[in-house]
Length: 326
Image (cartoon, rainbow, N blue to C red; front, top):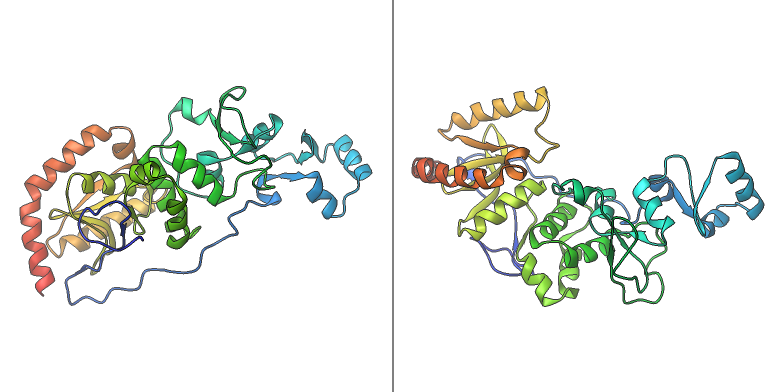
């Protein structure tokens, strides 16, 4: 079972948001919680795609379908599938070749935070079909299926199925990013992620390792996993009076991690500077890592983080001890 643990944890452990409050006398506001959002299946409206069966259930007839295609309102994408002018290109391309979109391509459409991909990865589609071959046309990576029929009627794999494929396909880090993002964005609850892990082969679970319900972006997931592998105890979502929740505290250093979509623009820059002033009031400093530092210059960033912890950490730990005692 996934259990809350301290420190860097072991296989199967689930790390949760920290209960650290600075200073100890502060009164933190509650972190937002709520039920999962969405149905885990993408709709016709979201994809711009529908099967013949779905269209007939909506009141279409075969003659109306023919007229809609002739008029240009609908396009015949593949046998039994139709799309409108804004149909998702990746899903349309997969259908055209007799496949369905899955893995990281599907999770992105579901709204899951997607890790950095290079040019080759961005042009390779992850697809599946019943008893699918391991070789697909063009830039397609086929995921094996043990079923003789479609697992789902969807043009794009549901979120649980896409994550199941991703866990077996991607590196442990990337799979963890998708799983943690699905929880952070309330697309799935921890119990559902637990079931995916329980059903996965032992080698897959071992590669993914422990997960966190506190990471708010894939960049944060990457940094936290690396620090814990180095043996550091990492506290996530620490509340600092006047500044709010800070991404993480490790070795005497507070850190904020740019997830690409949360710290951009002049308003975000000004907000970050105000938070820096408020943490500075307590004698604490925040080390900020940009998206580029986490994904494009990661090796250099690791060295810089370790140097900062070594140089600033002792002072920060003493400050932290005083704030926790106040």
